[in-house]
Length: 163
Ligand code: 6U4
Ligand code: NA
Ligand code: NA
Image 1 (cartoon, rainbow, N blue to C red):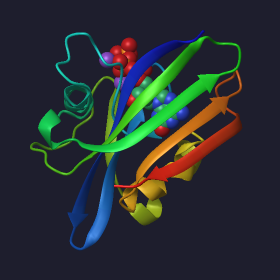
Image 2 (image 1 turned 90 degrees about the horizontal axis):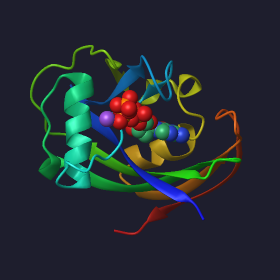
Image 3 (image 1 turned 90 degrees about the vertical axis):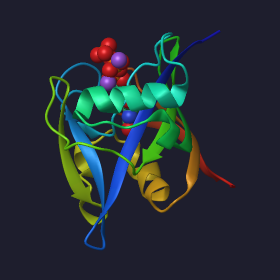
Image 4 (image 1 turned 180 degrees about the horizontal axis):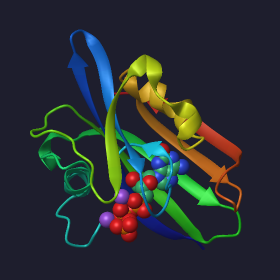
């Protein structure tokens, strides 16, 4: 049997003078340190909903205010690691409503990226498979099985979900 751990991963997007941009954060510590990613973390027992957990993490990590009720469900990603019983169930969101200005925190250094300039080579290696699809407006579902070193994908399945 496996142990499922629930996480959030949220992408803040904006239209900047007709150009689509997404806010990414350089993770400064912990799991995925050194990579650009969306904002998120573990769902805590104190979070009323998973969407609220996603909003809390983005607020904590980017120093902006976002609300769970504005989080758009963009699907599910499951990550496994060879030899580890823990499975990561990641709840993926997109959000466009926020207030404040993203600033660096102890966990993340935020930066806006044009969709055409997303730094896939400095992100988790699965992101290039599904993030373009999400940013085109699709909901996604996927499973990525990583080697134990958390670097190489040895198998994956991925699809979009009909609205
Ligand atoms: P603490 O204990 O507070 O440092 P917490 O912030 O709760 O941790 P964290 O940052 O370790 O949790 O959560 C991991 C984050 O990384 C979640 O947003 C999910 C995301 N993530 C994990 N594997 C990923 C992968 N393969 N591709 C991806 N995001 C991934 O794009
Ligand atoms: Na986090
Ligand atoms: Na957390």
